[in-house]
Length: 526
Image 1 (cartoon, rainbow, N blue to C red):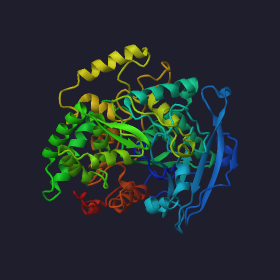
Image 2: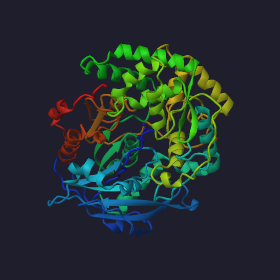
Image 3: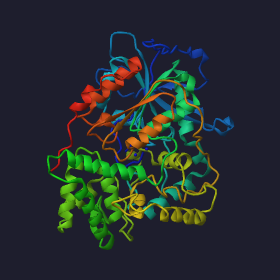
Image 4: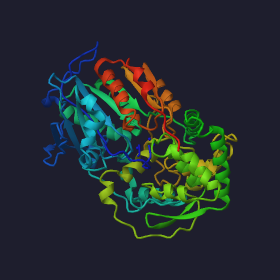
């Protein structure tokens, strides 16, 4: 859920990888993925890409294929899909093909790798010892006919909730019916077209954050082409847009942090202090400057910062001290964190001084907000009738929020919590298309081995959502990674253990080496 990041673009990952590889050799029963001869592949115009990134020590091949913009109406035109094939570095034949999507929605995987090619081996080297990988820029991003909305640029995301909703509405109006072509289903079908073009029989799927959603959609639509699945920081196709499990996970994460802090903080005290601070900021917001613009730090912005801090090894340990300082009148540490965010901590207060808009297209080569908005508004659950006018949607949403159980989103109010998280709550309330596609959630999934990895301190995609994602499959195992947050493989302390588990699972269909989990250290508290 980009949750860069990640389901939302607040922590975009530095590397977006989609991996596919050549013919697989079976290691466990029923695992072989016999290649499909290129002559039998779905017809698609293709060309070689001479600007292919070259990660050190790896052989890569890039290319593009042309696919229907709308597979239900091929005459509507075509779009480009860019892929990158990364060969394994072992001397033995490849064991299989791992198809990796690292989240978003909207991460341009190949563009991300070109920016920091060393991360491919640094993060996924264990898998690349035995498996090939294929990266794909999802349609509408990077080298796959990137789309751009004038009202929704990653360099100029509005800093207020209302401004964000207006920007999403403007993007939907600008796209018109084209927005219906940018869905998880369309991207999953593009991935399968790349698979067929390369002559690959079956894939090992690795989905991180939103990638767990996309790979589940792929598995529904193309079950015969799936060998095994790893879902890292997973959430199911049906999830709570009020983000109640996320609030519960935030409370739990703070308690766990303090339990392991050697007495440097007490979880219940930190939560009570957050509630007190939220009340003060709601009554008297604090102005600050971020990215050259005047912004406001209120209780909604505090909720956004707390949500993002959960499991963040660089920030979470500072949170108790930042809250204590703020309650003593020193807002400097808190506004410093707010100003340092890649995207604004959303607030509810207007007006804010507008600054000159940059084009944003250079940064959007990596993170496509057009695809981000289209996928969320086409695919995700809504808290209102999709076909209703905005006025009726607003009434339905407000009534639903008023009926939430008291304390469900503590230590914040329902308004602050739902407004602080980009892609939950009313994100698509003003989306203009009332008759767009809806992602089915009841299609059967293949009976293949599935491993779900959830960070113990992750509030973005908490373990509760990981367990719900696992229940979608006939046989899935959930492993919680201690002392880590969102997408544990990007935590340097957790990466060796997590990648050992993933590598073993892709080789054998099992994950037995869990002893290393006890070696992941707690996040230190300042």
